[in-house]
Amino acid sequence: RGAVNAVVALFSLYTLLPLAWLVLASAKNTDALFRSDLLSLADFSLLDNVSGLFAMDGGIYGRWYVNSLLYAV
Image (cartoon, rainbow, N blue to C red; front, side):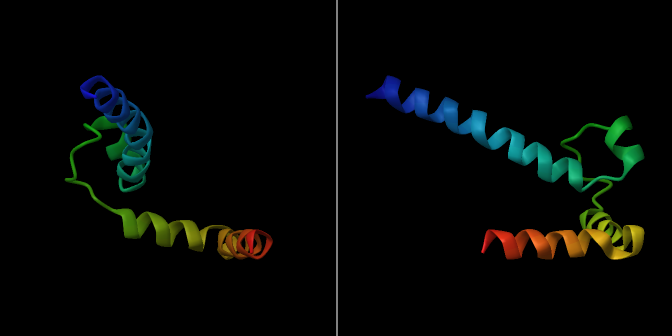
C-alpha cells in the first residue's frame, strides 16, 4: 500500500509541477523570467501580463477567447 501511495504521489507531482511552472512563469515580466529564479515572487505581475495580453493587437485575444468558449460550449 505504501508503494502505491508513493507512485500516486510521484505521478501527482509530475502532473502538478508543469501547472505550477505555468502560473509562476505567467506572473513574471520578460526580464524577470530570464534573469531570476522562477520560484521567487519579487516581480509578481500576473494582472499586468493578463491585461497586456487582452490589450495587445486591439484586443484580438479576447475575441479568440470568446470564440473558443463558444466552440467549447
